[in-house]
Length: 287
Image (tube, rainbow, N blue to C red; front, side, top):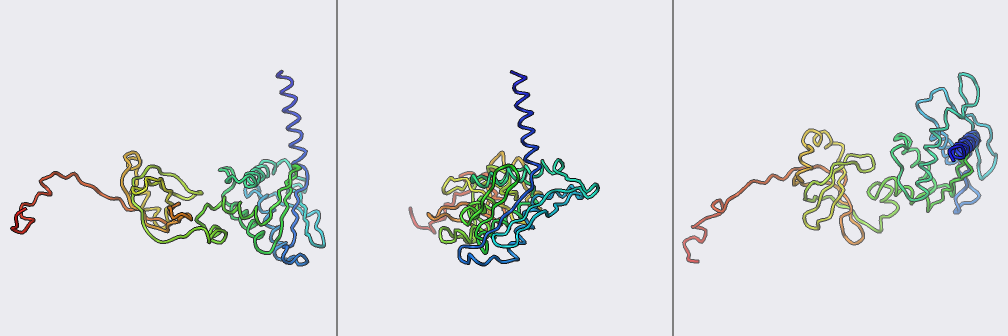
């Protein structure tokens, strides 16, 4: 049995290596609104961003060599990795990085967010690729060389952008502005968690009116303040707090989340009945 598993593992590795040594390809098609017009800038920038995704910043000696480009629409470009030190193909050096990018796009295709392995500096590049499929480009097909071609049309691009950004960034405003509203305000509740929201610092507040747990993304201006004032004990004791920022509502008027928030703690003190007792509160009148 172990021999069989070992054979399977070697076959899988061989297949992975074979796929990694294929050229990486991208095809860009014009928008259905103007099927005969593909803006050169859109097409070229889409190609540049695709190969930027595949470029690992930690491998400065590796570049993607252009080996093919079509001369008409739809526009297709193919590239292979080359090590400038030897002018030799560098498939082995880029295999792991390309696999990470490929997994990220596979997750987006399934409606799942990018995982922690997806490089932070590549997220904005991926977003730009998706955005062009909503404005100017009709479809982008990217081939990572593993016999799986990921096609990005307007609907897929919209879903993927919403997944990357959540429901509170500018892409969400553009795509779903008729289904929600935002307004500046504040919510009060008890802190139940300290976490991140799409790689941004956040706290989770159990809102005292509804009892619902609301994710509150902290503004850049308030981060230092939070780092200096919020402790693990505040979370463990569910300290009361007020978060003021931009509140995002769903179509039914329920709060979805708060972002660009600033936090203020609500202090409470122990009181006894004598603190409220006032025999003269009636102004001399009888009860």
